[in-house]
Length: 269
Image (tube, rainbow, N blue to C red):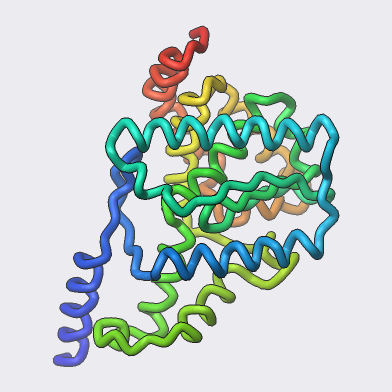
């Protein structure tokens, strides 16, 4: 009982010392890992993954992915600058790549490393639908969900050793590899439900700030849900996401504020 109590106090102190608040959603998360090291590992793993994938370049779809992604990240940078949080993004080096694959999937790694699979493009239908996907993935990167997952893994595995500062770089790297599997397996990475819900909300706001119509979100997620009905295999993109009813309810709740951002960006209501 005494040990449990002490570990509980230690975990509380640890979370208070390393708690980060998202400036867009207000959600707090545990961010223990050194961002510089995470970004270095992320960049290396992203390059490794791309080297094992068929990258689509020069096509209209590849250009769309870069254009839509860039508009969303630019909107995010403007917002962070407006609230005095530009330093949060100082070491981000954004990349948006299209990978040839029938999978209905997209993913992001720390530091702004984003990939979209060609298989999901028909479901997006247009730039607004693509902005739903990219807003979601950009939000995973901006919200530090990778750092949070790694931090959760470190606490679960090493507990009090983190308080003593005895964790080695190799141990951090080991947890990173579990969160972000090697090569093509990175497509199987999973965030928690809270992180997915936050990425939905944040992504909805960011796409709106970038001038994309947030009303495209509900039909897009409905189409994604249909892709896993009727005996079809669930898209990897949805494997840890909220159920469709919860997701649509949450989007409906957040849509009025998103429309305010959209209108401010010049969108027509």
